Image (cartoon, rainbow, N blue to C red; front, top):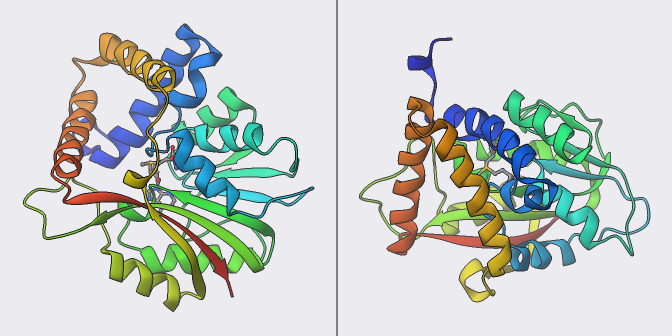
Length: 258
Ligand SMILES: C[S@@+](CC[C@H](N)C(=O)[O-])C[C@H]1O[C@@H](n2cnc3c(N)ncnc32)[C@H](O)[C@@H]1O
């Protein structure tokens, strides 16, 4: 594939992910988790979601659309005293999936979440962070998550939701509305247990943001003149603007597979 064929999603979630791995290598492992949380997730949001997953003992867990694996690595540390079960990362972008395994030594498979390489009823809990807003195949993704979750298994979601008609939208994004998200979850066999807006939770600690920013600065220093960096950067700017205006907001949910 030529560079001209690269989609904004591949630029942002694959090429930039590979560059992020290089930058983490330069700055050190203390930068890894904040820099590898690409969806957003700040520690207070991740903690809210983690508390609703019901993970304990040796429960198997899936991070679907795991990106560079930062959230799953954070989860293993956060729940360390009550949960030591197996973790699987599934991420369609091959550089990101491979980098996640190298950075965090967590098992990672390159797979779309519409077609997961897992048996039925095989995970106790899963989360899907910043993924539903990047695909138009929302019900296929949710139905596949329902297939691999055990009955009663918990799903955590971080979703960017459109509050109104958007005057501009980052390419490759397909934001649900609050009501379409609810309808998609119910139609695929989930019961929504709990929901909170990200804005109601505290922001990320300063040192978390500083580490993520330091990694981004190294990526920019080394690749800022690359067309794919520019493409990804342009998408991030558009997303920043629609969120700043409150046209798109972060919603967190816990749901149960029925
Ligand atoms: C905003 S990033 C979030 C990554 C990660 N969940 C995090 O929070 O750091 C969205 C991720 O969803 C992945 N993705 C997009 N469509 C997907 C699909 N249909 N199934 C699984 N992952 C998908 C992208 O490749 C990207 O890594």
